[in-house]
Length: 439
Ligand code: G6P
Ligand code: MN
View 1: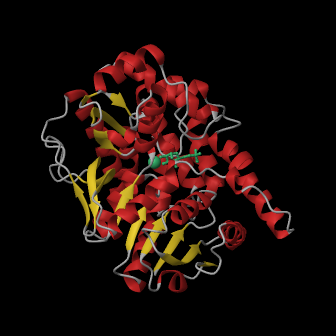
View 2: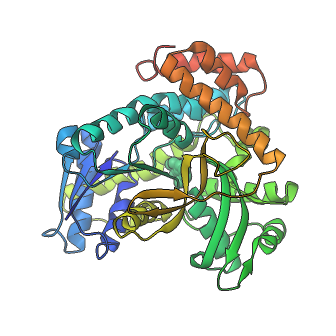
View 3: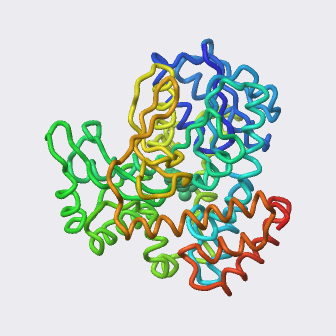
């Protein structure tokens, strides 16, 4: 009988995780679910929704759910901890997007300077959570989704090198699913080889077991000629449709690997800025859609009107993180793209970089594969610059160093010069008052 904690329980992604947990119950026997959040209002709303969800499945007698902001109650005797916090909420995400955009730079939650602002906010909170887990449930596994992932996991690596934490992102699954659906493949047959940093990487090959060959050449051809018309999840969400289009564009110009679509922000920063609206960014869109729907749903349940739980996004996100927990518990050795310390996985990249590479997940944790080939200079150069910038940012956090932060901001590849880097940094210092360390 497992105890599961969702950190950031009030998030509108929670029902997706719960749905995946319910669907996996035969292999993942959990009886206690805790929603842990510092925002009691949101957490209580989500508790109503999750109870409703569990009731719909007739499982209210098998699973107890509670919401709390008390770390001791949350983590004591926990077995699995799913972390998906968003420090500062969507209000601060809006700042992350709008401040760089005002200066003509990419305004995005994980890429560019917005991601750096978010990173400096998040490190402290993630380290706190890890600390609580050390105290109350040192044997528990932390499955971490918290963005910006390379920065967050780099900070945890430095402070808690031995922690039982798995850093995962659903983007690779989402890319694979999108490609498979568009061109008529089943990704369950795939053995993909991917490398990069989080939200910053490339597929080198995709071996299809049913076809008995590497299908990368044909996928590259089709990406160039047909693009991607069907979304795998977030259907009808135009932002994502645009992201898939940019992926096709990257392949047209650099036809040797399937890119992570997030590379658009680095390779075509100008173009992505042109498409953004300073008055209405992704944060605004999410507030007006997911956040609104969650509030309405909680209100409906409170007033006994019910509601459709399927309004929530049950995409790859929840399933992916639950599959990993199942893989640990049952020693499945499932293969996932995970963020790990390089240590030779990519032979010609520094050992202490946090990289995203194929890894097997079983009872003892993560076993990354070694690629056994050297990545080319183009990818390597891009990654090294990005990695150095991220490392400098984490240095800035631990050393409370303005100099390091300015270097990190200047080196970020969405930034054309040190003048604008400094302007944005200075604005972010003010906007992040109370969240950032004192630089
Ligand atoms: C993908 C990324 C996540 C990111 C999310 C944002 O799933 O892998 O890292 O948090 O997209 O989605 P949103 O709908 O909040 O913009
Ligand atoms: Mn991600």
